[in-house]
Every structure is written in C-alpha cells, then in structure tokens.
Image (cartoon, rainbow, N blue to C red):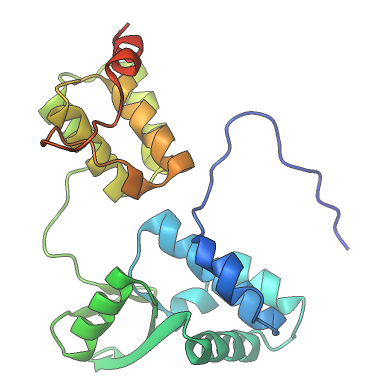
Length: 231
C-alpha cells in the first residue's frame, strides 16, 4: 500500500460534492467500483463543468484506470460494473448514440442540467463529436479569461497574465464568466474583486454568487467588503 503524505500547505483545489451524496447515496452504495466511479465522475463533472462524459473517455483516464486496477485486473469490466450500478441507483443517466465514428456510451449526472442535456441528446437535438471521447458540441466559441479581462477591465500586464493563467487552470470556465459578470453588475471592475468572487465560489458554492443589484437581491459582497477589495 502506497502511503499518502497528507495534504500540502498552501492553497488547494477543491471539488464541490452535493450534500445529498453523503446523506442519500453514500449510505446505499455497497460496491467499491460504483463508489470509485461515482466520485471520479463527480470530480470530472465539476472540475471541467461537463454535462456529458463518454465511457471511452473514462476508460482513457489514467487516474481512474489506476484506481480501478486496484480492485479488478479487468479495468473495463470494473468500469462497466461501476457505471451500470450508478445508473441503476439513479446517480447517473445513460444514453447511447451513433454517428459516423461509431457508437458512443454517454453518461450524465442526474442533476437538473444533466437531465436537460440527457433529454436533448436522447431527442437528437444535441450533436456528439468523437475526439478522444464524446462531447456535446458547443454552440459557439466562448471567450477565454484573457478576452474577458480585456473586454471588461483593460490591458493585460505580465503579472496579470500569470494570475489569469493560474485562475484559468484552477476554476471552471463558467465560474470565471460568472465572476466577471458579477464584477460588472456591481461596477467593481478589478481583478482583485473577481479573484475574491472565485475564491468565494470555491468555498461557498457557485450558486451563492448571484451578485445582481436587482431589488431584493443581496450583492455578492457588502459595501465594507467591496471597499477592502478596492484598496
């Protein structure tokens, strides 16, 4: 057994796991393969903001393959069993589609957005591209973090470029877009504010960051917090 040396000091990346997983799912899971597959699926889903993940992508994932190899020499069999049990339990949803590249086994988290994506794939309303796996085709190119900075804050400096690269590697694209939107809506066009919003999302959850100034809606930060960030 390889000994874990503990979590290092400093800032660490975190993955959000719904409380219902611990309250409802975990007590019912009686298969180690299912547990490993479900947790890994949640990790990929939240880290990459993915609504659909193909089985062959999971089979090519070195971290998951190494994990499953510890319980079954036949990794594909362990993955299949884990996925099947997760679908049967209701944690994941399954769809099978075919295109010119062949057949794709697709899996979705059984969440509101996952159910919406699953329904669209089942209805043939969303396309699938096979590139080292299958992924729902995005409707258009999304602006990266550098585009967002230049469009909403100003010119890039070498120091800011490094910070933006770190943020882009740490947070999902949708979080970054939301953070810039919150900054614009609150008229605080500063990277320090956006960085603080992202850090709050990582600890409190993305849905906590509404940030609008609509009547009856609390801004992301209080006036006192905003003053601290501005200085």
